[in-house]
Image (cartoon, rainbow, N blue to C red; front, side, top):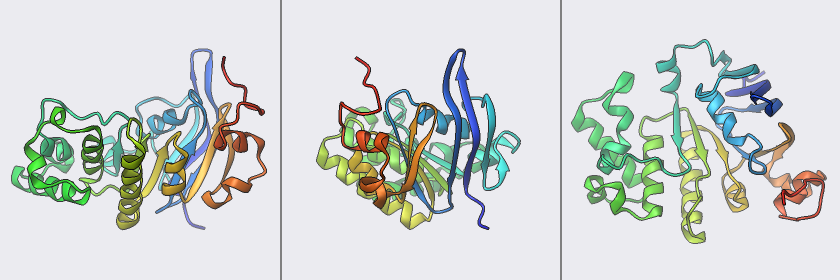
Length: 252
């Protein structure tokens, strides 16, 4: 039996009396693009933070390629990941190429400066940005260009696993479509395992192989993206069709 690349085993996460995750069980297979959906505050982004060790697990276990994430040596473990943050999270004081090559200029992945710059320019080209962009600063870029720079940074170290946190937030529909296509192409090209958090159903349909919906701290539904519209699950149906009426109570 194939070992999942990421396994959530009865994962709980509480912040005081706020029980955000109440027993998440989910497998993400190697080379698969998994998209996590659900309402605001349901703990979608918390899942990524738990995998990366940014937050401690209250109970349960997370395995990456069969290894307990809390027990592996951190630098080697984190070197396997790339991350596209929701707001871009670019360093304003650094030129674009140093943002892209950030992990290649320090730590266990350190490369010579010229080599790191060359890799950064190659990755910028891969996301559709010209070499001249390398020496600009984030403030000189549009929102769509900043998102592309963030994507180039996420893939700069050739990670095995990439996390995308709301990859199209703040973008117009056309640029959202461009980013969705880029994400899908890059994941397929690299053979990477991808886990995406999004509210954007166009992103779900463009990026996902499989989808999981988080509701009230557990996986309410999971399955192939092609089954979304015929799931038979009233919670999923209400969510993907943005209906006010249904089992999910809207906060008023």
